[in-house]
Length: 423
Ligand code: GLV
Ligand code: MN
Ligand code: MN
Image 1 (cartoon, rainbow, N blue to C red):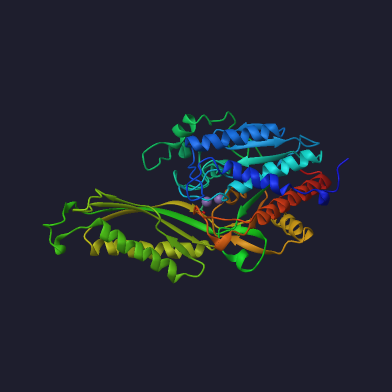
Image 2: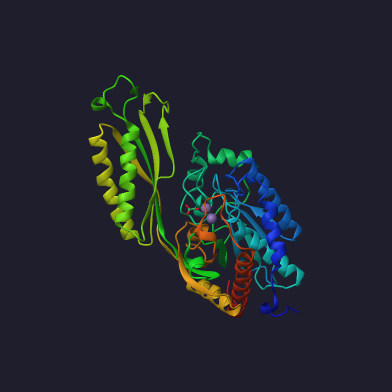
């Protein structure tokens, strides 16, 4: 017979040592992780994860996007699984926690249920989504996006990194093209919960341990190519130049101005820039850069896009360059499912953790999964809100609290679905 769910507790030391164990795969000198999606290091952490899940008695299935689903059976396996998870890929200079804690707390949850011989009614699954970061292959959340029907598989396979390597080829190269079709129609979930670090400063500033995430703000990505004329740095008068980098610099200022005009909720970032020919005595003839705009309201993002659409061509005209730019991604604002938010709120209250509701500033796979399954997220603080940085830091007791809330939320959803005879 099952013990009461409230008496179940995750093993904090085991969870922490698992996080530190996988942090060695792609470890950087500054204490972070560089584990870009579909690299050999990504393959290594995937193999580690699959072996650990199988050792915990799970059956592992992989879909054609390389998404990994590890299932612990329930009492009634005709029911849809309750899933938890996140991503194991990182930014080029990523930290040890972004994404990772959401996947490994799922493993800890299953190990905890195993140790207590606790039988859930529904099966439980852990998911590792492919290419959440979008750093190597844009856009972000690509494979949860295919799962949710936002992108086609072939669109995803055709995405290229900055070296021209295609997502589909790299997925094949690392041996992770699974046999299962990707999509909620083929692999439906009863619910999805994702534990993540906040990646912002609010929980720490307010001394809260748990963020009850009610949704994710809207995000739009753009790419711009500015073309001028390569010319000699010594013999070309200032008045006769078509300097692509100068034009891009002014455009970057414009991105900053537009976002600042809609502050404090709006943010705007140029994070990637490539200059050609990139030679100290050649006036740059071409400049490529990316733009990331975010705001909780799609209406404001529309305005920001319009303002950018006026500012960038005006700068191009002033600086005698040509401009080609386009929006490559629109991830609208998302509101999570009230029943899943409620399960997280109640779990945090039952365990006595100081908590508050929060909207995510970062993108997450949950934003796409929410379109096809009831979904919510749990945030825990990270030091000074610093993330996408090798120095990203989370306290062991906060990560443990998050995993504890994840466990309680999953078990209460399991009881709730069992009572309703649903799924
Ligand atoms: C994903 O990490 C994002 O928020 O860009
Ligand atoms: Mn993440
Ligand atoms: Mn990230």
